[in-house]
Length: 302
Image (cartoon, rainbow, N blue to C red; front, side, top):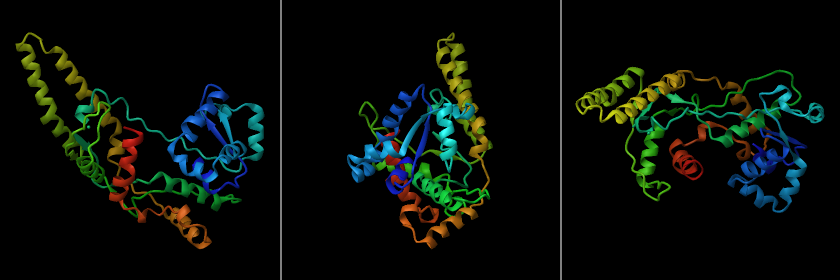
């Protein structure tokens, strides 16, 4: 979002960027390392060159705070200044951690548990575009409108698509781990319901565990550690699936009619359509995953 503002909307007077840190110095360092230091800013750096430092110092005020605290944990003097200057507040804190996956990785990285319908998936740049356009559309208006940005209505993405594309991608372009060894991939079994999941777990894990437990008794508990570890993995996998079941088997499709009106507004106003486009109908999911999403995961996450 910050990159887009600096690149296409330099006339924005001031951007207060709240970052959680122990002090102002740490917040400023986070801004330099975790924002300006990213490859994402390559285009902006090429556009402004040495002037980027002056631009960011004029436009961006890094604020040390915490959204969990009263007044966002902002100092009184700065909070007073912001109250009189801020026109819009944007909360982009959206991080989901899927618990601790170390004990269950060998059970989970073998099946993919989802409802075989569609899910909402949107590239981040389109999300940012929709935020900017909605801000412009709402400027000076009192009426509050919810704009839901998603693909489930206009360009549904089948849940089984990603594991299929990922398998094809890593088969043709093997990923090498930190030891430099290629990681072998195999097709993941799609489990489309909880009964299918429990049946799969019983056949592939619960029954073998019982057999291992019997063998352990015969061997005078020589395999105690293996039995305990195997049991822990199964319990954690069951816990994770139970915890995220409402999200894995979500049947809802969101109404994006307000967002569609925003899209028409972009076309009518004659602004740079490509620069602020966010219509999911143009997304080719295979192309997106193969050429953008998965290479990004390999480079920045793996």
